[in-house]
Image 1: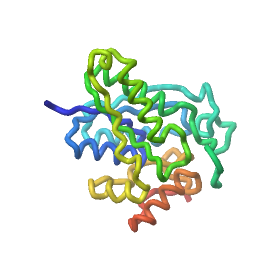
Image 2: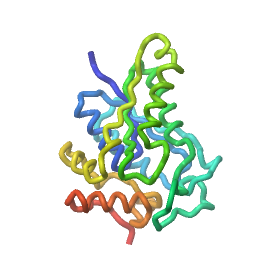
Image 3: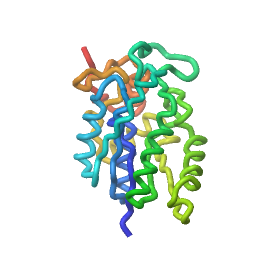
Length: 224
């Protein structure tokens, strides 16, 4: 029986690695991305290119418009993206973002009659987001199996988090082994229209440190 999975694809370093792992494990993949009101759409362009390159069956981009709610430096132009390390949960946290993303992927999974969802969350080298932790994933998987028609009828959903316990360097090394081209990914919170990174935000710092620790040249395109 053919294995099928939905992969949440942001266009960044972690999500392309999660997609490569799903493909390596023999899954036929569907990709799901979100235009949620983020500051730039460079990552969505990257996601579309990555989805085409990996020959996913279908790539959907859902419009969420979380900028109407705000509350995050990524969706509210009145909140600056910090260029220094913050204590606690940073202002780049988008309220309930992964809950919403997984909810949409769960709905599509029911329509497609598949039971596997991949998400590239990471609980080691991350920015302190509560919806990147194993506790959150476990809770959402339990919800998925009691809140859906498929779950009530005895089907079981599994949320795959292959990167959750890896450092950024370990993720990069694994991706390189799987042939991932990280040059085409966009991780920066303040990328310009061409997808070039700022080099100073949390996402850029974690990414640069990961390549350094992995001993692999950083292929990221930076703004001058």
